[in-house]
Image 1 (tube, rainbow, N blue to C red):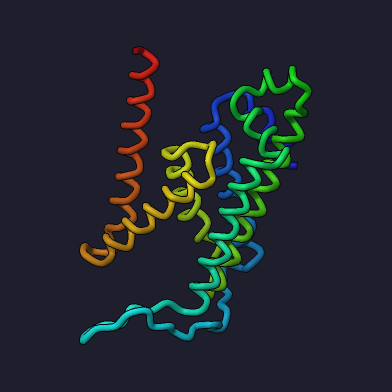
Image 2 (image 1 turned 30 degrees about the vertical axis):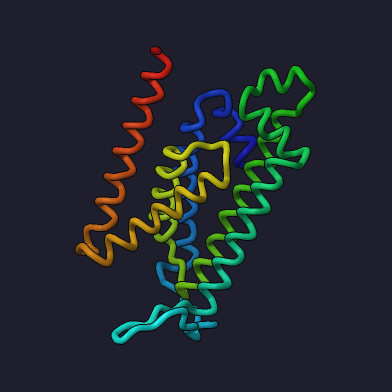
Length: 216
């Protein structure tokens, strides 16, 4: 329904138009979930929280919990599967063709609308999987959590591009590492503000570089 009524009319414009529209959909769904939950947070009991020590020293232990390892394994498997599908499968070839030039792909017999709808469906399934994994790890995903994740994903996607799941995943991993380092060395209450500022600066610099290359 979202693909046919909202996203497809924007498909002929810039990709950023669709990304920004997903943010509006996110706000609508967040408010709907808030109303459904009666503005209450629902918490899960701790699960698979047993720590596994990978390294230790005199004053510290480097650990991961079972749920963290499970989440990481599922995420890595999903990224590998998506990268393989986009690189080797017939859908991946059609998807790349539509991403590069939808009009030329349509002239070659590719059903552009079907590819677009399948891409929206696949993106929704990945988002749902990410929400489930985050909920299992943190014990809670409230109605307001999606806005924070959505803003970060919007900027990371705009900076990293839209054509490579692996490159987008590496960009997100780098962003997460930067957040962790900030939390370890600087005031955590300023973390999100500085991370958003960094993403905006990168987006402006990358956009300026692309414009300069077009002029050249």
